[in-house]
Length: 596
Image (tube, rainbow, N blue to C red; front, side, top):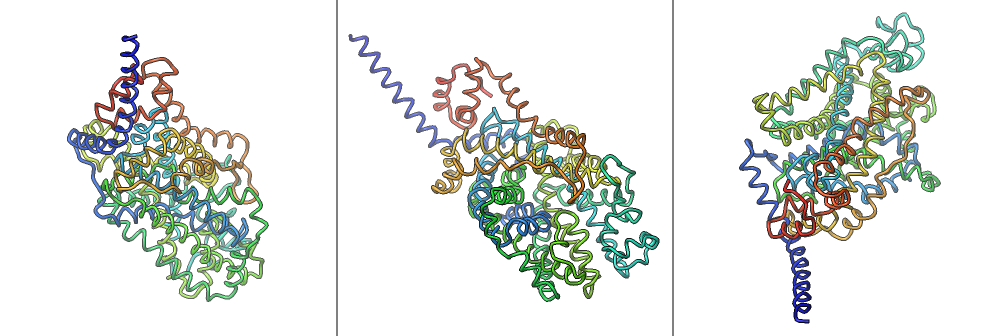
């Protein structure tokens, strides 16, 4: 009986000890992380740089979030999804999905001070492939995103001609083609048959055609601009964004003031805002709102985690989250007024319904808007300013996406890579050079089809999977409680109930968007083999999720069940961030675990 009593006492003491250690682990989580980071900085050859000022981080984040999609995607989506009524689901999704998930990514990046690969690997090793997948998807995206800047450069250079080349039929590219003097000239300048001035566009993806050498040279220039803006890291990027993140707003508001005075502008704006309340009963409208918020802010591309990793540990990321999210949405709404006032003006000139002019994608900014400038007073002023604005919007997004790849290389292979390249500037040069080579297929005559296929299967299909697994790893497996502790250590207080509920329940349900087959324009549908190629493009990033999990299972000791339990619980994170006393507790739970 005495022995039994002693055993009972020992068992009770053990249970109390485990409970106490668990509480202690939560309390000391942040302090232990700070110690670990200090140790890492001492061991690293080069301490992690930080933004020169908080404003630089905010501007860089706004610049990344506010991209070309705000100009050519949101206005058309709003009009097609119920006009002014669409703003209701859009704003609801902003507060239930966009803001909470951006806050989550800022938290992970700033707390760990690592890029997406290494930060997500430490939060949940079983899903470390998600971090690598975000790097891949961002890099694939930047290889064809720079093609947009190439087109903008092409138009910008032609805007300095004595007269805009799409204003008349007195050009070598359209003088013999009467069709281009009947239909919209800008459409010919960008697209059509023998008048293929910019793209020399073929009839389908199966007809690749040759390289457009004018675009080839401009693609080199576009990548050179990107390189010289980011080759010094966030120190140089932080200075560039003062211009690239603010200049587009001056142009947008100038265009808004000018456009609302044009004949027909009122009809276009009313067409944009006229609410169709019945659309709110359609599920697809709500899905469109969630997808637009998700893609516009740039969640799950790894860029927000990467940029936040260069913050100071106590930076107020909650404030920055609100600023970035609200600035992004406000820009989309202002862009809607700018675009549809111009579309109304075009409809008035051609005596056509607004619906016949409204479009989205590259056709909006490279066909409709150049046509607007060709009929406006002082067109040689407005056209260059507009295309410089497009360049700025593209550059900001490009900075962030390229930085994700550079951060991954430096964080993961810093000493080894620096041993080969000697300087970080050469690493950036290598990343930009490979991106340039991968972008060449997009500047062939059939490149527009490749561009649209890549965009759909990278920015829609792949992102859908990555977003789901990222949210699963951070909010459900790592857990809201531990995420709250991280925030408390940085900001001095835990997140409120709203964020905890969104992270735990609402946001995970909103990250999956419906899949639709890829298409180009309203009529061209890709052949089956191209759809298959598209899915392989998606797999280039998605495949790293199961590969990362298999690698962790292969290198972790113990039975399969024990491995999964270890790699999916907070114990794996604790082994990185918790001190030795708490580590003893987790080794008691997982005796076979090895130090990582």
